[in-house]
Length: 229
Image (cartoon, rainbow, N blue to C red; front, side, top):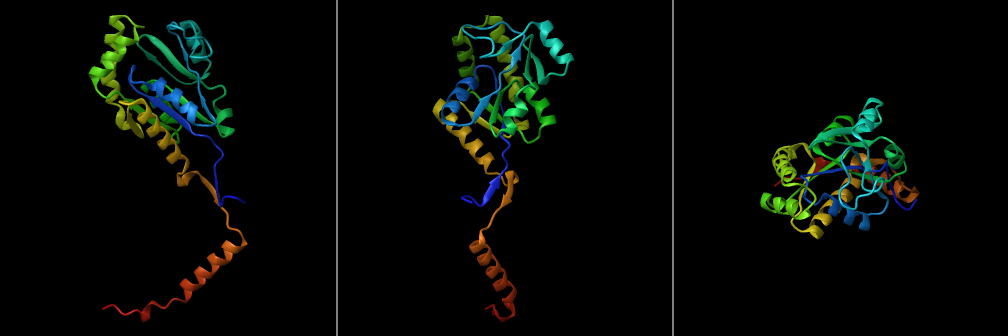
């Protein structure tokens, strides 16, 4: 065997949250370029598409009635209502990808993230922060996708979301995209090395003999002969 440590095949379930305008999508898009075997879960929403967003690529766009039918039929891993619209994560495909060893990124609102935390405590929770609230407001305005009323709602909501940071495992400030991506990548690599992901440690015949010899040395060691000066 090439590696004496066998880790779980199960992929990581990664939740990335943060205020609207903090750069979550930009970070995720860059991560996909450098991380192999990583899949982004496509959320569903009852809101209208923005700009060039496409159904089945950016979101599954549903009517409010269709979304509520999915809730009724327990077809969602989590869902939440945000700024007057539903957002949720379909259960379909999630388990299949994880069992195949693929890491799955969920970019979801905080309400939904906390629901997942109640159900799946092994999930990695990462909160993305803007460098300043003034910068966040500037980004929201420059997106040019929402009315001033909606921008104001998102900005006020951001303060509420930031109060939830202690419920996450990690926080990354997105003041520089490249640096933020490297930090998130490092977090995921560290999670892969956690001891609780080890299934078994293998020793070949030579390594076993060395291990046994060390144990014998410890048994025969007489610490009464040591003088303390």
